[in-house]
Length: 264
Image (cartoon, rainbow, N blue to C red):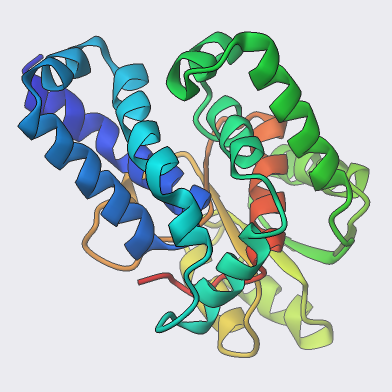
């Protein structure tokens, strides 16, 4: 496979990771852009990208590590969501978040994450454990699950309640979601995209966001349909079949930034 095509295939996932790490689509994309520019300017770095996702993420990590403190401290001239993200980022070590995201959201092994972060495996394992402990300290909230597959819905219910959150309702269609929200606005939404009656989870979420700003995590078997760059992309996107650790991380991220408004 040509190098350009290989990098292009991995790019949507690197952009997803960058958004989750920075809390901003624009900031995340800026880091991705700097990574690609660095690769174009360095033939050795460019050649290394032929070895797959690990060197690509490692190149990104070097850019991020050299500048993340400046970004985390920037607060002037940003929108409300981004300002809130910066405030919260100042309370948690970026390395912990990075280690957790790499090993869950991006599905790298501990050894691969260690290579990406230029650390030893034991250090990365410790960072992940510390991040998990931070997740456990997150405030409990009420969760609406919009999912038309009963087994997946039940799995998500069990996971959500095991994390100390409350289920305020489940819905298999847009109409059912509207009925739940009419009774109580959730503090977090987990939503599939294609629903039982042909309705859209995207539309169901739009209905909710018209009432209040609520963190949303989309869970879909077709992430590429949303990771196109043609429209504002969801910040929190989990691919089916999912690992519970991935959903757990996404929940923590969504509650951490406390927003679901599309990030420009």
